Image (tube, rainbow, N blue to C red):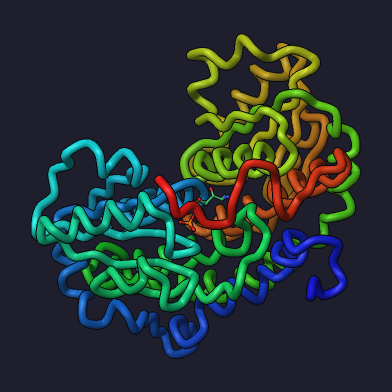
Amino acid sequence: EKGGYDHFMLKEIFEQPRSIADSMRGRVNSQEEILQLGGLRDYMDKLALAKRIIIVGCGTSWHAGLVAEYVFEELARIPVEVEYASEFRYRNPIIHADDFVIAISQSGETADTLAAIQLAKSKGATIFGVCNVVGSSIARETHAGAYTHAGPEIGVASTKAFTAQVTVLTQMAVAMAHKRGTITEELYRQLLLDLSAIPQKVEQVLKAADRIKEIAYIFTYARNFIYLGRGLNFPVALEGALKLKEISYIHAEGYPAAEMKHGPIALIDEDMPVVFIATKDSSYEKIVSNIQEVKARKGRVIAIVTEGDTLIPGMVDFVIEVPETHEVLIPLLSSIPLQLLSYYIAVMRGRNVDQPRNLAKSVTVE
Ligand code: M6R
């Protein structure tokens, strides 16, 4: 049932070319220039007119929400707030009837997320679910939704569900931007083409597995890790750190790279591994200087870079390449080497990767 893989997590990581394609199947058609999400059909006007979007979720699903915040704001120019469901539900949030609330949940059973949407619903907001498990409680409680179609995810650490969530949310943002006229027809066409090319590019990223395994071997006994990214790669840094914590029990922190000098830089010395997600995007030059700051303090740097980058490889200890794509789609590629890195480190430490201690696949208690 693990399809020849040692663990479900590894199988699910390697399934991503397929699961991402499934999350676009019947939705994105780049030849005919169509992007249609069935669940959104009756709500497209509402979404396009919404004054604001509120996204709620927990853990990895919250990280997918943070990625979506960037994409919705960048393409559709609509303000987005992303909230931990557990915080949202307990702080008497201001919710209006014209708010569009997106609840993200792999299991569709997370107690805090369910309670958050019940609260928003009672205030008259429209609730849209992005769930993986068909017929789950959250899927049933929402007004409409789009399933992620990643297929069953068994490993407690979410991998393919995350990339499927990001894929669905990105499709929503692109559809909305097109409807609102906030992107050009040319960009719309380009994004459809770039989305369609993602599965094959993920395939390419997965080819780096052996190299990532070698890097993991070197850092197996690290006690701490810092993950740094900017812009869309900031939530990727958070997600990379969460994956490592969950399954290897190594303490890891994700930070926006620019925040480093406001505190975490004090932690950097020759024993501190720092993972930079430093792809060629609008923050590239800024992150290059952040890398210099870490190297000047002898930090050991692993960098996720765009294929063909010739600058960063000369500055850091290890590089992992990902193919080029449109900036808003980068997290779909840059998150994958981090899944593999945490997987191999956890295996080398002898951890129970699929069922880490103290964790359950769905958190149905608050
Ligand atoms: O099923 P959900 O997406 O609602 O679950 C939310 C979190 O509990 C979940 O993402 C958790 O953080 C995972 N273990 C992450 O790998």
